[in-house]
Length: 173
Image 1 (tube, rainbow, N blue to C red):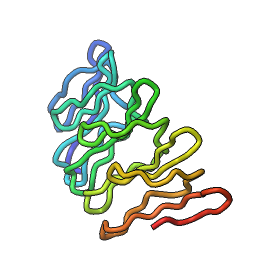
Image 2 (image 1 turned 90 degrees about the vertical axis):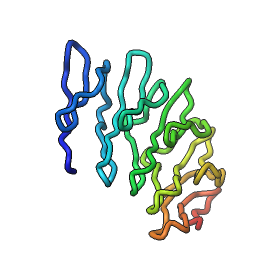
Image 3 (image 1 turned 180 degrees about the horizontal axis):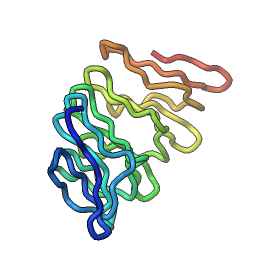
Image 4 (image 1 turned 45 degrees about the vertical axis):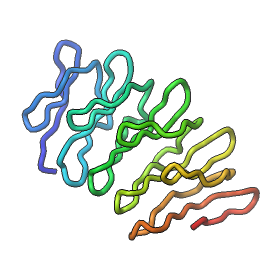
C-alpha cells in the first residue's frame, strides 16, 4: 500500500489518520479496520458513534447498524464496490455500496466474496436450519450444509459451491 494509516485516541474517542489527515472522531473504531482496495484510492473502516456501527468508505458514512460482522469490509478487485455483513434487530444482511440486501438469520463467516471482475457478489446465507448460496441477490438452495463457496471462475462467468443435501454432497456449478 502507498498509504500510512493508524488510530489515535483523543479524549476517550478514536479517529483514523491516513497520510497525516485526521478523520472524524468516533467512540470506537472496528478492529479489522482500516481496509484499502487494490488501487488504494480510498480507505474503508468501521466506526461506532455511540448509537450504532457504520461503514465509512472514503468520506462517506454508511447507514447505522447494530453490529458489523467482524468489522470486515470487502472490496471488489477494481475497488469500485464494497460489501460487508451487518446485523440489525437480530437479522443479518449483506450491505453492498451502502444498500442493504435481503435479511437472513446469519451469513456464513468468510463466505462474502466478489468475482474477479468485481461485477458479481456471492455469499452463503443461513435461514432456520438451512443454508442457501446467494449470488447477485439470486438465492440457490436451500441445502443442509455448505462446505465451500461460493467460488467464482477466473473469468467471472461461472460460480461453484459444495453443499450437502440429505446424505449426498454435491458440487454445484
